[in-house]
Amino acid sequence: MKLGLAPLTLFRPPQLELVRCAGEAGYDAVGFQLGLQEVPVSPLASDPEFIKQAKAELARWDLEVMEVSNIVFEPERTFDEGKILIDFAVEVGASIVQATVWDEERNRVIERLGSLANYAQSVGLGISVEYMPYSRCTSFDDALSIAQGTGQDNVHIVLDTLHFIRSGGSIEDLELESSNRYAFVQLCDAHAETPEFDDLRYESVWDRLPLGEGAIPLLEVLQRISVDLPISLEIPCQRLKDLPLVDQAREHLRIAREFITPVNARWMN
Image (cartoon, rainbow, N blue to C red; front, side, top):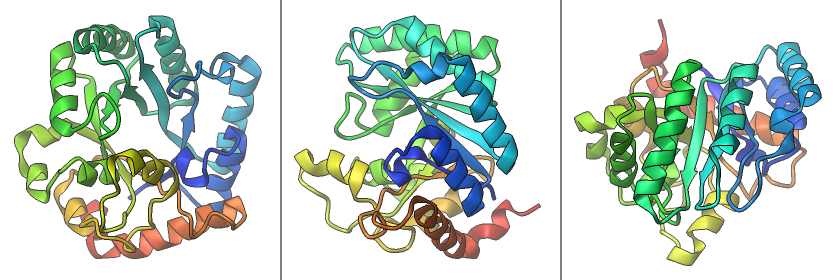
């Protein structure tokens, strides 16, 4: 099983620092986050010097790139902004381009996503839509409707275990045929009590739990998902936040490997 380090786990440090931490801690892959809600796409995504440095740092640590995030669907966003992130993903060898939805106009989202997916397909990539209860794509059913609406078979869905649980998902949902639309997993654990709606975003960005320290039935999830799905650890954790960045990364990886051991045989050749 290959495990990636998501940018949010270390509370979004500078990208090259994130790559170094992932490498020193022993991860197999790392993610790049160069697009956020209400923030222009980072100029780094099209900066030749940054791309050169990123490639060199990835090679130094023998790291793969798992995800590039986020193509952001907001009313004022353009095709070119999404294209920049897709092109960056190709440059660094990423396997996933992630998208989030903040536009209430569903038909516009589907049209724009379809156009970007068509371009992504031309360069050998797909786009994975992340649903979040506090966004404009709040559940698996929402994300599935958007993905199917594009008519593109390279539009997939992100299985983030926090959003899966907080949106009302159940283990049985993973046994439905439609769940094969998942193409990427972000693992974390979470407190048993669901926060008030206005606090869901805070929990997502600042207060997740390491694997096995919360109430999400993670082992049951892992027993039901495809062994082909890439797995990223996205675990911004208050308990570990004061440790040096590389120590946070190393501790999350240690805990995850120990926790996943009971089902790890499913991923072994």
